[in-house]
Image (cartoon, rainbow, N blue to C red; front, top):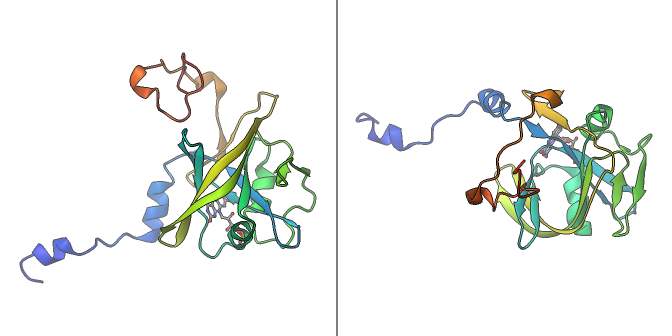
Length: 196
Ligand SMILES: Cc1cc2nc3c(=O)[nH]c(=O)nc-3n(C[C@H](O)[C@H](O)[C@H](O)COP(=O)(O)O)c2cc1C
């Protein structure tokens, strides 16, 4: 290419390390996505790529890497649970983020009414059936139809992931955001007074 036009039309090179570093500025909560495999053994993996997607119908999404063994089991069973981790569940996150053969060893959990494994101590659980799977490069985008919701009765705080490290909120630094009509469709609206 000599005139620069062709060069501009080619895909820019994105360095993977820089991709990770820059995207690490986006702070997220952490979930453990769980299910039962075909032998009725509980499986799961740590997942930060989780989001609310739609209110009507109620949909959420998460993105497993295409080589995830957990995803293979979830795909076979057609259902999964999202466990939103609390601040004190760092060790649980590390375990489910590893390739340990039995990630549930030493973990307190129970089976739900919808026959899904739920982690005790999670801030919230969202039970879903797999609605659709969309290609996402080296990941899948899994869209789940929400079947059941529950949240902890204790006012725990979330475990966060930021710049490759665990962190947590500082409650005294949180500020109520004013409700605005144009944000009425924002998915994490909880009351008419706040959209947080
Ligand atoms: C904080 C944290 C967030 C993660 N988020 C994701 C994610 O969004 N998608 C993914 O595929 N893996 C994610 N992982 C990595 C998986 O948890 C890890 O690769 C796990 O070993 C996969 O296990 P599996 O092969 O049993 O599915 C995350 C790990 C950690 C510690």
